Image 1 (spheres, protein in one colour):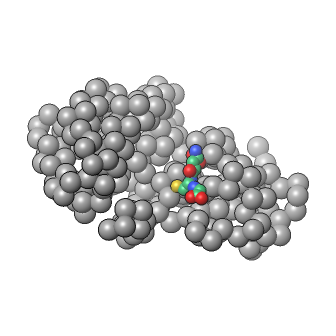
Image 2 (cartoon, rainbow, N blue to C red):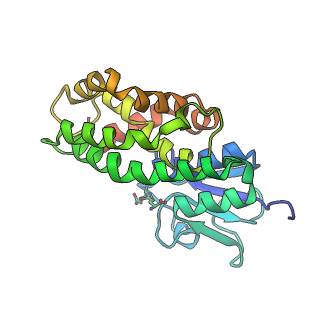
Amino acid sequence: MTAPKNITLYNTQGSWWAQRVRIALIASGADFETIEIDLQAKPSWFEKVNPASKVPAITYGALKGSDGSNFPENVFRLNESAVIVDFIARLYPSIDYEDPILSAKARLLALQFEALVQTPWTTYSRTIDGSLQALLDGIISFQPFIGDLADVKEFGVGDLLVAPFIGRILPLSKHELGVWPEGSGARLLAALDTEEFKPFRKYIEKISSWSAYQKSYEEGALLARFRALYSK
Ligand SMILES: N[C@@H](CCC(=O)N[C@@H](CS)C(=O)NCC(=O)O)C(=O)O
């Protein structure tokens, strides 16, 4: 295959969808450029990059040093974080597990996380009477999908799809950043600190130790985004 072309990422710090793509690009070792988009004041040309007007989006093959407003019409552009990550994985296969079985397990984990944890977490953290028990039940059903992945030292596409979401549960809880009664974050942390949730904590530790994840993530920006979102 010919060498990959220049990738430009249209990013917003604090966006978890964009963080997926940042992790993929950092893990790939690609020489990519980043253009920050202020979602409160999007530039008029941004709709040309992504008609859905959302981050993340990428261009592939644009000249380096573009400010985003002046790339040629025929440059390839792509949106939707999971599709962009797949595209990057085709260009840089090393961002996924070499073992197809581990790759499939991690993708299944990401899918199950969305169904079993993401939804009850959103309800718990964004509604005043969300159920802690429903969230804990979801995590218990999710844990078997972690299996041996928490012990494997490698990382893959499934892990990076889930990382921005699983990675913020602990910091947001610690800083009580939810639309929830005060102390809800502390109650969740106390529950997760028990033996029953050891696999979940272990998997979060694995993600947190990943250098591509660490480099993709600035806790200050994440907390600021949620403080603004929740007017806290
Ligand atoms: N399904 C899309 C979701 C992207 C998305 O919703 N991005 C948010 C930021 S986290 C956005 O750009 N929203 C537009 C806005 O706030 O105006 C993906 O996976 O890329």
